[in-house]
Image (cartoon, rainbow, N blue to C red; front, side, top):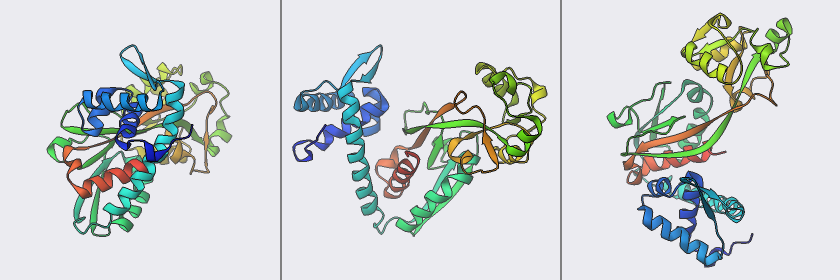
Length: 295
């Protein structure tokens, strides 16, 4: 599908992109700071211009048509180009000073954020960044942080939330441990192995039982509330440990278990105060995080 950018209204394309990524008109409108009727009119105008049906209603939600799915890839590329131009311009503003506080899980804070902050410092060297590494949901309404990276969408209406991608996770064990106890060939085999508990052991057992892996407290000889510590215990050969695929891929001493059968996905949400729309420094950091975690 060819798109003549000179003949299209970017506002209509942004409306389509937000609706497609959020999979609802109401969520897309919140993301763009528009009313739902305004967003709906912009999407309809784009459909009229292209003479294509881009969405169909399934139940209470929206699904892309085949034409919509094809268009989405092109518009996402246009959006990335526009975002890159905006970031470049925003990074040059002289008022980008002061502190920005980001909260994320301990694993994400240790493994993903340092690279993003390095690029941020290049674009806006006067900014100062504090990272709050916690697995608790920090309360943005009480100003415990300016931006949060979380795996669930907040309910508070005064917060702006954007899901940047669905991430993949797998289950890993050290090669040394697998050499000693053998490599599992099925989910049933994994019930006879040691596991490292990350957070609440009972909740982890419940989750794994839902995946068809019947674990008990006896499967967890070690545990930690800290994800980085739990991962390092897994690397030390103390048992199976779940991990984000981007982190697991960097550990040559760890082996992914049943990769063709056992995979989990989880959303990555960026959350900020509504002042995101008026604060250049918060906008810059938010957009850079969205770009970094969206790939």
